[in-house]
Length: 489
Image (cartoon, rainbow, N blue to C red; front, side):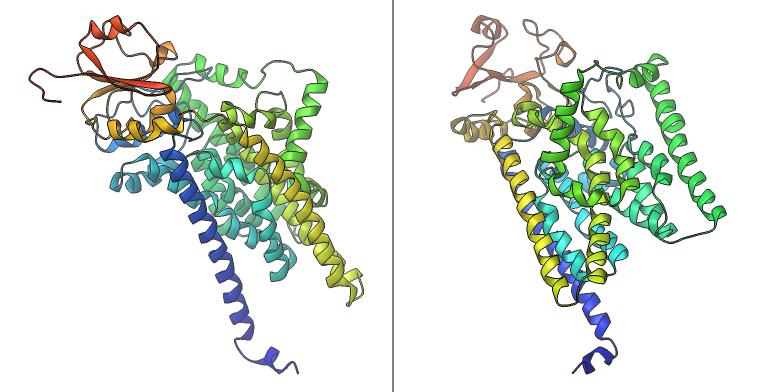
């Protein structure tokens, strides 16, 4: 009856089938996310168009421009640029994907790259659960639940962000660390450090996570030293040293000072922490309690986010793109939840009657799924409240005009319209002074040819006196163009 169990290669066939299912799920989720990202981009509904414009211009000018940017993000401790090598963050990952962007220089390339890497959390999670439980069924059951996790929705939709790209690397790092596998641990840790410097703190805290099996004290000490030294070196010397060189001596203290922030009231802190725990991770919090030392690594991220500044309730507003700062918390609590799920799965199988175990496990999965769906629906409702930056009737006319703008044309545009215009050397906005072009608004330089403005921003005489003429006016925006001498435009 069980002769097939002795057939050579039977387990190998099941193993191949398992990973085919895992990678098929990854491809489906990636394709769905890429399609959704492209549609949002076309509708000017990206997380924050100015940030996407910055990333795209950074890559574009590195490959096709003069190595300087005009889209300059600001932080409390520094302002990026104009050189591409003067950045507020340390992210070697950009250089790793530069060849891809060079072959297809467009913001949608970055959107696709983000989706491709973010959804690698599916095979990474499969490896973690399989290592912990030894059960392919447990791994597949967990994988079905992951896309229902409320925080997955905004993280997957939030443009191109290095913080989010690191999520699968964090899961791989935890799996490799628990397994004491140098290759997997090195891949995960290297990936995290390549994305952004905040992940160095996670690396330095990995020693809080125990190995899966008992080991000699000297082995534990060796792994602990490696992680702590590497994390501290990358953050304190590589990043802060880079920041000091490029942005000045005061930038390092200003960077660290920002984490103090305002002192929130205890009630606000607890309310926001509840948002992250309940709406953010939903049912995963309960199995995460079975892996307390893994959850402990993620706990500081809950507290740091709970000042109210990045509260999940702001996901319903235009500031929702700050959800990227939830990435370390999401990755670590998901890892804890997956490990706890594995322990729960094995515990039920070994301590429950053989006939009752499948029923209990199925019931557990259903309870988890229902709980996650509830949180997911709440997240959908929150994101449904995000205002559309561009009215539907303005979308196609704006794209038609943007197609006429040449790479050498200087452009001033409202934040929400900047990403599609970022394949050029001179792109500015007008909301903050640091983003203004020289001479704004009454004496713009001659190479500024297009203005994509909010309707009625300034008296028309200001633009007409500089030889701009209005070429289109929609419901919320208007476009002005300054024709070149002898131009037939």
